Length: 230
Ligand SMILES: Nc1ncnc2c1ncn2[C@@H]1O[C@H](COP(=O)(O)OP(=O)(O)OP(=O)(O)O)[C@@H](O)[C@H]1O
Ligand SMILES: [Mg+2]
Image 1 (cartoon, rainbow, N blue to C red):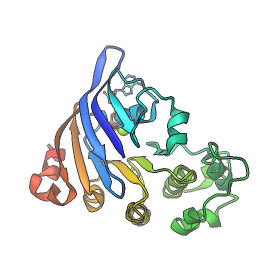
Image 2: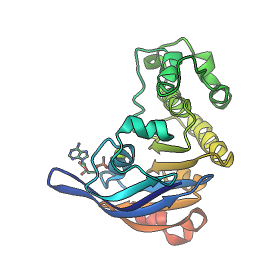
Image 3: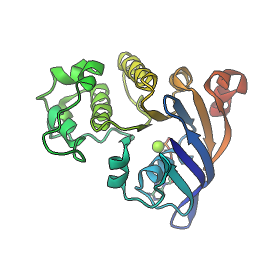
Image 4: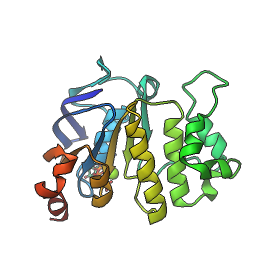
């Protein structure tokens, strides 16, 4: 589904990502763990084409996308839920979801599945995004990314600053999406329990390199929690 080979990235002179290689499979959740500032968001931004790749290649669905601009990647089927949600606070919930359809032909409807997954979005359809709670905004950001039916969904720390009841809803939604087998999911997380419960595969990053990786079920014996806490 997605194949990354020897990816390097730098901001000016500072080398952030140092030769990352990995693959994502359809129907699987891959969790990327790592402490603050190790380069997790930078990796997601390079997958979206928001920062330039210095070296290496990214292949999506068999097609090289290393130098495609962000909107072309969205069109190709990559959905992105950025860190901090970045919904449009002055637009209504409905308008935010319609923004997620921007790459689709006019008149395309918001998929019903989004409201089944997050019923609160239907209840709040005409409220302004900025009036929603943090957790509701996160659900909205996920809904917006799902609107165009991505085959790869990328989420950057969806549990950050969110109340536990909504974390459970988001966990259930991510699991359901993976189980449909229609998409690959790449989840950046610092909340270990959430990451472990969802991971089919994990990657642990430190200073722009993967220092551990493996199957989700081996996370406890691999000592991932301890490695994150060091
Ligand atoms: N636009 C930028 N220009 C220069 N340096 C940057 C920029 N964005 C991030 N950095 C630096 O790159 C490094 C990696 O940042 P990044 O945001 O990818 O980390 P992160 O793992 O997502 O951290 P967090 O868990 O806090 O979100 C950090 O040292 C950060 O200060
Ligand atoms: Mg980040």
